Length: 257
Image (cartoon, rainbow, N blue to C red; front, side, top):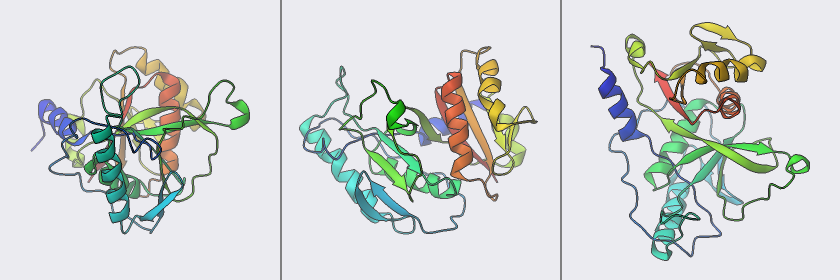
């Protein structure tokens, strides 16, 4: 049975929250922890065992995320107790940036995002990174916490990020229930991008997204992919960069079963 627009939005809201933290700021922080999602979205099948790290600390692998979960939970607990707030706000800082090797499957990315969220992190941002020699006045933030899957190739300063939200997996017959105000990027296979079923070259993605986002107040982007396919982090990273350039606000990961 087709899912209504309201229930789709509601399911996304229940599942999607994100986070940022810092090992350096662990000794400060306070506030109410975010409520973990009650029914995490099943991630696509993982195909490898990738190493995890939080800043410079190694924390297990994608097949055993217990060390990561414990560390994030402890960081968040310390921040709440010591009242580590985001600058200019009374909100406890719980943001984490997540970066991965380009060849890592989306299933592993989703798994790590959900482990971090269940441990109390929110929001999770995909980082936009600039080379050190191109950073200019951009300075590394000593409180930034970067969660890495594998060994990402990109080195530099985190300039900004875009919020990543794991939406509910849906059947192919439900794909028309994705709210029409979303800009939908469909990834039939790794490295292939479609907007309105039209194949878009990677180098044209930013301009195409920009032209669509200019016509709507809603700046959210749906990254729709085959749950049983072979889509990799590189495709998500390319869409994230294009979305930031185009003024996008969030990326929703929607798996088609």
